[in-house]
Amino acid sequence: MSWFLLLLAGLLEVAWAAGLKTSEGFTRLGPSVFTVVTALGSFALLAVAMRQLPLGTAYAVWTGIGAVGAFIFGVVMMGEALSVARVASAALIVVGLIGLKLSSGH
Image 1 (tube, one colour):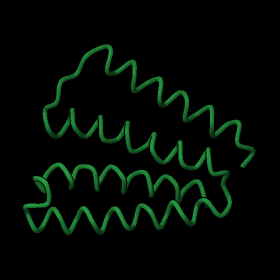
Image 2 (cartoon, one colour; image 1 turned 45 degrees about the horizontal axis):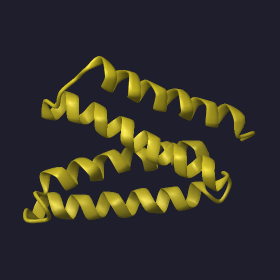
Image 3 (spheres, helix red, strand yellow; image 1 turned 90 degrees about the vertical axis):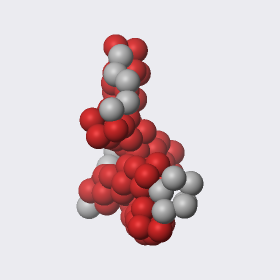
């Protein structure tokens, strides 16, 4: 269950990062509220997941999901540049996340 909560926390991190971008520096009310709510949800789920998962593993996986998810969101939804180097770099993050999961013992 803690891994599922960590996955949800990571997905909410992607959501708040996207909201932060669309809030235009917190100058737009709707996206700003969305950003704050999803950030708080992400932190709360991370905190609950950390009750059972090691700190280093949980935090690295949470930020990794956020980083790769934000990268994918940026490319797909915001038309950001896609290159072999960017895809390879994101793939390396995913490999690291898999390694952390497999070696965590949970």
